[in-house]
Length: 391
Image (cartoon, rainbow, N blue to C red; front, side, top):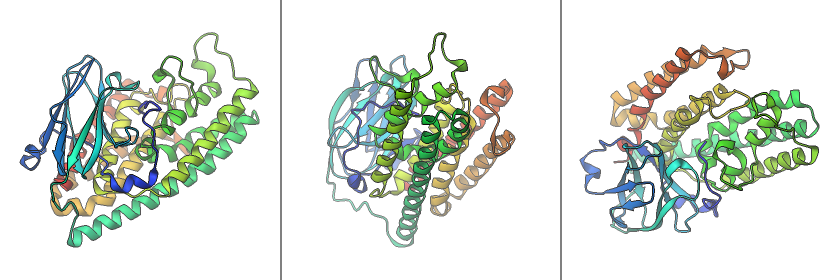
């Protein structure tokens, strides 16, 4: 997961419907967007945006990393808190694009070198009213409406399951029944991982619930799933690690349950847009590339393949929801995505063991390389999805 500062909180879930959520797409987004491209130079000390104003409609933020750390770029809502869109994992010397179906309004741009901390170069950004009609029409409009409604139902269902599973997990952990807690850990987290990009839009909840120890800032309190994970699987912890006492167990578990219920309350009023869905699929694959395929996400339990599968499940649900629309616009891209998703699933299925998966530490170097190569093979065509459907 991506570590977000509590500053990136989410104040009013009901307002999401008015925002066009976004994601990363490749550089060759076509001539339609060329006249509305905003360049961004993300360095170690600045987030230089070529313009602080643009007309509503299709915008492209072309983000180049001129620094020496992997960086991220965010478009925030007018309160400077809500994440409207982001492009992650931009390596040094690399350019990645963020496609936005931008509604009129006030926003902020910010970069995050190292992908941790508050971010730098926060700058007001205005989208003026171009007068353009940003809605879909005809049969496409009906398909988009159905896809958005279906995905909303899917998200609510996954979070409902997450609430129930988290309560059972927390009860076992508080009771000291570590075997049961360990058995529930990975199967419960899949409900989070399938809708992770939606959960991450509530920026204040995400770091409390899913922050990795490696992403902690100085003095930051560590809570959530991975803090409990370390206590349940202490074998790989640093020398001198001491098991949590009962009061800390109760505090961690109680907060996790409370935060999960807050997440559930927040998603009730969410509405989704076509570009949010397509960029959500892209974002979930980014999550696989940045943590799961490297084995960094589940550092102590090594249950990364459960998360890997869940991210792919979520991306596939999002893709399937818009596939009929894509077939009308670019049948060749749809065929390619069908094939690449299938090939990745074949690799995952080969690692199944009982109701779950082998531990990530049991995989060979060649097996991990095969996963990495196939994730890359899927990432390139998937990254074109938003541009094809929106531009």
